[in-house]
Amino acid sequence: MRQIYVLLCLLGIAPLNAEPKKAPAPAPTGKKAPAPAPSKEVTYSCPDGYVEDGEMCSKVMVVEPKLRCEAGTLVDGGSCMQAAYKPADYICEGGYNLTGNQCYREEFRDIIAECADEYEEVDGQCRMVKELEPVYRCQHGYTYRDGACVSTKYAAAQVGCPANYTLQAGKMKGYKGLEQRVCARRKCKRHGGCQCRRYKNKKVGKRQVCVAVTESTPEYVCDGKMGHGQKSAYQTCSATQTVTRQKKAYCTTGVYQNGMCETYVPADAISSCAEGEIGSDGYCDYTREVQGKMMCPKNSYVKEGQCYTRVKIEGCKEGKCYEEQPVAGNVVCSKGGTPTDAGTCLVTYKQRPTYTCPDGYDSPSKGKCMKKEQTPAETTECEADETDTSEACTKEVDTSYAAYVICPDGSYLKGPSKGAEEVCVKHDQVAPVFVCAADYSGPNAQGHCFQETAVAVDVSCPKGGEMTDGKCMVEHTVAMQQSCESGYVIKAGQCVRTAVRAAQAECAEGELRQSQCYTESMIDATPYCEHGYTMGDDGQCSSKHTVAKVAEYPAGKAPPTHYKTYGHGHGHGGHHSRHGR
Image (cartoon, rainbow, N blue to C red; front, side, top):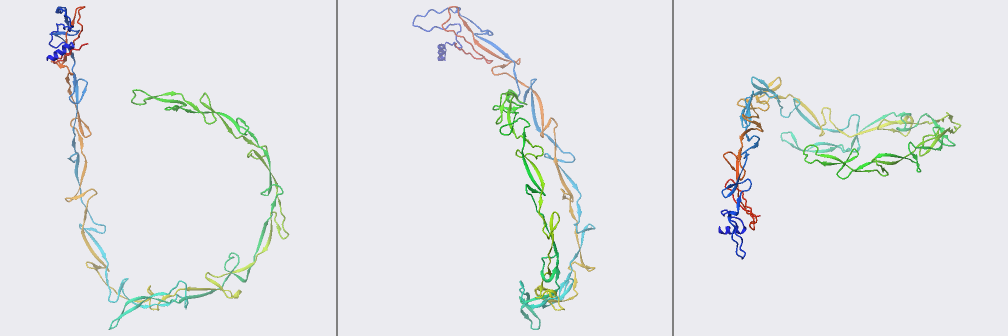
């Protein structure tokens, strides 16, 4: 504590418990110090706004307390609004039961009882009368076929020909004989009766063909069928032909065209310009004023022939937050154009002149005009044996020719002599076939002929069937099928469906928001004082500010160093501090 006291003295700061009325002693200088001045020459006072408080000066500052809300938002009028959410209540209507936030209800329908398509309902049962296939039985050696018992006797077929054909020795292209199934191995019983144990296929009739020869009178033809068949040696066809030779037209001058000789007379076309004048190159030169292309500086754009830039409006947050300001631009002309002060371009254009022809001449082409002149063409003369028809020369020519002999398709002309002995011959050749004796049928694919004997068949019904009017009938009875409408299931003798729908949320108090009840309540705000202030009984916030008194010295006797002492105190007694200046 003593060290702190000494340090404060060296700094020229009065300690808290120092005597304020005593002046500080001057530092020793090596000379004898003068006697201190009497204390009554120094006076102490408080700054403006402060009052004496013992040996110090104090000032009490009073301010209105502030308001705060423990929860919620501070609103006008010194009240706080509290917002609260709580789960909503769920209810079900229309006979539905609540489970969680869903409504459930069981719905009932009568069971549907019915029979399948092939059944009919009889006394609560499903009955079906069905026809069964009868059982056919034949005695030994017979086979059931088409409602009868048939016994078949086989015999080998013979090689023969179809009707009107004769079997001859020979070969036919593509024919390699008939294939017949024959027995290669037999097994015979001691008491009679043989049975074939193994079969093989055998080729028969390999060098035989079936031939049919037919003759017919040929047909002699002239017009309409020329070029068909063979020419006859003595039958001719009389014919004449009119030969027409067109007279040849020619021109001594010009070009022949449709019976006329055409010549063309040239002339120079007359050129003129719709606007401007014809230049040295033969084209019409004229100047037009056109709109130039406006080129704007960077970050600007063209609008109605003027360059604009957008300037942001400070503080704007909604709507159009910029304004358009015009800026200078440059007018650029296309190649060959000259800009003007009015922002346009003068461009010189070239255009082909208009050509016209003198009277009587055709439309110009490449600066030239043509006039067509026509004169009748000259023609050649007819020969002595020709007839002149003004436009052509004609004469009759004998065109008699040999008649043609036409034979039917597949026939040929027979005999070295011609004339009446000419005959058409046709040779038909087919492959041999298997044939059977008159009392046998067939043959079949294996080359066998067969003879069938039919007897009555023994007909009976399968087990459970009953013969009625020649038919085997059986009756089948089953229980009716039970089912429900779509979405229902059978449960305890009824069709049941569980219907589900969302429960309805409601609030006994407050407003429904997203399945919760929202309420608002107002409570009084809590007053409080800022740091350094104390709440008094009157509800005001006060703070006591304390400073040291100010020493005032008579004129001419001021100490070597002047100190101004001040302090700041709080409602809890405050504290003291001195700052030298």
